[in-house]
Amino acid sequence: MLQTIKQNWFSNLRGDVLAGLVVALALIPEAIAFSIIAGVDPKVGLYASFCIAVVIAFVGGRPGMISAATGAMALLMVTLVKNHGLEYLLAATLLCGVLQIAAGYLKLGSLMRFVSRSVVTGFVNALAILIFMAQLPELTNVTWHVYAMTAAGLGIIYLFPYVPKLGKVIPSPLVCILVLTAVAIYLGLDIRTVGDMGQLPDTLPIFLWPDVPLTFETLAIIFPYSAALAVVGLLESMMTATIVDDLTDTTSDKNRECKGQGVANIASGLMGGMAGCAMIGQSVINVKSGGRTRLSTLIAGVVLLLMVVFLSDWVSQIPMAALVAVMIMVSIGTFSWDSLRNLRKFPLSTNIVMVATVVVVVFTHNLAYGVLVGVLLAAMFFANKVGHYMAISSELNEAADHRIYKVIGQVFFSSADKFVAAFDFKETISKVTIDLSRAHFWDITAVAALDKVVVKLRREGTEVEVLGLNEASATIVDRFGVHDKPDAIDQLMGH
Image (cartoon, rainbow, N blue to C red):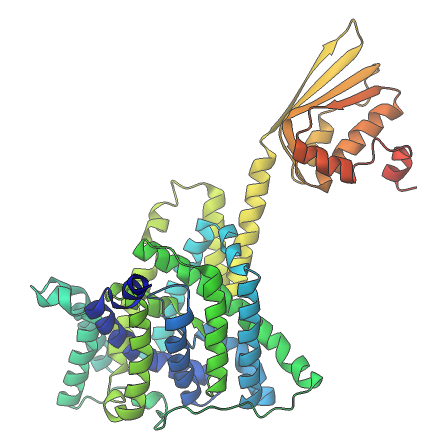
């Protein structure tokens, strides 16, 4: 047990502490911005980011991943806050947490294995584009100082790692933020700062039970929002966990992550915070800054709170240009540039799934829609491809007036029509044998196709023998098939 604790918490002390500091600084403007999107006070997003990050550090299933208030979740809250107010949002956050814990116990995290690599790539690319687009308001209608500071920040981020000794020890995004803040203060530059985004809280969060009536009417109001928040939150968290798995060459417990996200959201709701989930951008910052264990996530949450409550005078002077530079670095690092180079090499279906996921996410700003479209397209292409892996040959024994059909491959909804079309129902013959020893029947559509073939042949006066079904196929055919039942023709024709 001690070895596990050391591995998960103290195996990378310097990297985790420094990465946590970088993430905490980058979390502040995002939490404020997401609060503004949702239509609530900035402290709601900041308290949420603190609570979720600290709790997920202990109960999450993916060390080194950052969870906090996110834009995807904030977008889902707008109507609820507008129509019913903050208290109902807090109640919806609590219910969202309960639903996510239930999803964890139902092992819904395991559904991630149905998400193809092309969908994950599309998701990553879409998020990189959204992260970059989110920085554009900070770069429009501004003075040349902002562009100069942003360019200088990017220069520091990409060149500082080449500095002997120090470059490998201190994360370049942290250096970027500290240096640009010092320059802005020293030169007295009139540029937008973190303090301009909203009032930072000056008190610690307190326990807060939502002031809503505990009635069915309240449940009817919050449930649709809670369900949407739970789904989007888990989807983004699972996808982010998969990406961090790849970045760190480690594995994570997706079902534990579902439960952890639920517990963290309940804690956030009870502390006056909004619902949140894993953050791809911040998680990438954490990993690229050297964060690997749960300690980096805990440091990010604790330092975030300490800075906004006790060091708000200093934090409010951080120029947004410094944070914009960090987020541009994140978007460039997040985007899968290999996916562009591989467009010519990869199959068309893979490229379509990836591009469709990107387009839907970018245009709807809803990660769930993009992933859903990607998964559906991937499933359709897969079913279509597997459906082609079926061949039916036949040979005729003229002396015995007997034809043998040999079926090889997978028979299911995609290949069922092809299966039926391979039989000649007009041929006048006394006996037909259907050899299924090298075939597999997957669903009731396949069973219905077999029923149709057998009944049609028998209706023409042909004796039909079906043989070679494997155990799994025989089970589904025996259960749902009707061709061996006395009233097979009537059942098949619906009489």
